[in-house]
Amino acid sequence: MNRRSNAPVFWLLFGAGGMLSALLGTAMVYLSGIAAPLGLPPAAGLLDHARMLAFAQHGLGKGFLFVTVSLFAWHAVHRIFHSLHDLGVHNGAVAKVACYGTAAGVTVVAGAALLAVGW
Amino acid sequence: MNVTRKAAGRRPYVRPMGGWWKRDPFFVRYMVREGTAVAVLAYALVLCVGLVRLAQGEAAWNGFVDALRTPWSLLLHAVLLVSFFVHAKSWFEIMPKTMPMMFVRGERLAASAVTRTGWAAAAAASIVMLGLAAWGVAS
Amino acid sequence: MPERTIEIQVLRYRPEQDERPFWQSYTVPFTDDMSVLQGLQHIKDDIDGTLSFRWSCRMAICGSCGMMVDGRPELSCKTFLRDLLPGPVRIEALSHFPIERDLVVSVEPFIRKLEGIKPYLIPKEPRTLAEGEYRQTPAQLAQFDQFSACINCLLCYAACPQFGLDGEFTGPGVLALMHRYNVDSRDGGRAERLPVMNAEEGVWGCTAVGYCSEVCPKGVDPAHAVNQNKVNSAKDYFLRFLSPKGASA
Image (cartoon, rainbow over all chains, first blue to last red):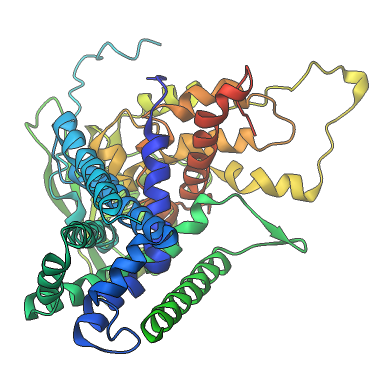
């Protein structure tokens, strides 16, 4: 007891990702997962390769995609880790590594992909 | 007062916590709220795969887009859409609890006002995003 | 006119003779003005003198009579049998606490946690009688007033699943009282209470379920106190390197 917790680090990531996904997530899912594939407004043609590549190569687009994917992942794994505890999963260390490791992995992969598409 | 030595005859009974969240609708709603995180992770993974396919070139990207057009993907995204909405709703409801007590013109700022502000921001941000998408498609 | 009755089922447990708790049913004469506590008192006085339960003021200020009524943490003096018709009313000791006997639970850990947050005003600097009383504006009073209404009834602990899953969690009531002193303009002890706040068992044990604030009979809103202090704890975590004493905003 009284040993300072490192929870603030993960909680801030959780909070930032939660706020971002609360503000933009629904619209993003609609755009990328429903409207664009079905050709519905305002997204018909949004997923054309040339257009998407230009977006990902632009500094702002790159930043937006990286921040979104990464923070969504950090938000989700923090909550999932705590939900596992709620459901009685007691091996905290393994669960912790699995959860936060996933977010770290997503961050690295997304970052690498966004660098690979170039400028 | 010695609190650790059990007086004669004391045998405290500890009740199990298994299935605790099923015992009250409030807890069920809490678990549903927490469950939206699975949807957020799923979507992050979908986007991540998309980014990888984009980096792998036009053919790979087009394969990703074709996958998005399948009925399974559309169904998944419909479920994700509902989950994200539930996340947003529960997020803005809990947001006032993390903020200090605030007073406006001598009156305590109600939690509902904070929640409504959150919704307004989400609506504005979504409209801007949809507008940018439309502009991006048009140009 | 035949007497109206209601069935009250109580989870009994006598450590000297029972292996585990069991339900016992009583038929209690009922009038519209009877509280659950009065029902229990009738049982003890007229039906079964072995029934054990805590009570004192019978007016929702002492915090003694907390118990689970139909699965919900309630003060038995503040809960009325007429609202639980047609029954049976199921009464159990407060959740998440070990049962000592019948409706009596172990509360020593709560007392220790409460002592641990120094629940008293710690002056910012020494003050003489000649300096007179502290003065506070209504706004300064409003900052802590709500949180000082806590009667230590433990309903919030019975509501909190995180406390149920980990008894080391400081819990909603104690953290709300910690907040009450921290935001009192007369108090200067925030730094001394930080180690409790910043621990894993402090505010970081909370996952914002929010049921504690739902069941609090005095409107303390412990969920607000705890979650607000997650921000404070995070500030202290990141800004502590900027000054020797850390950022105690």
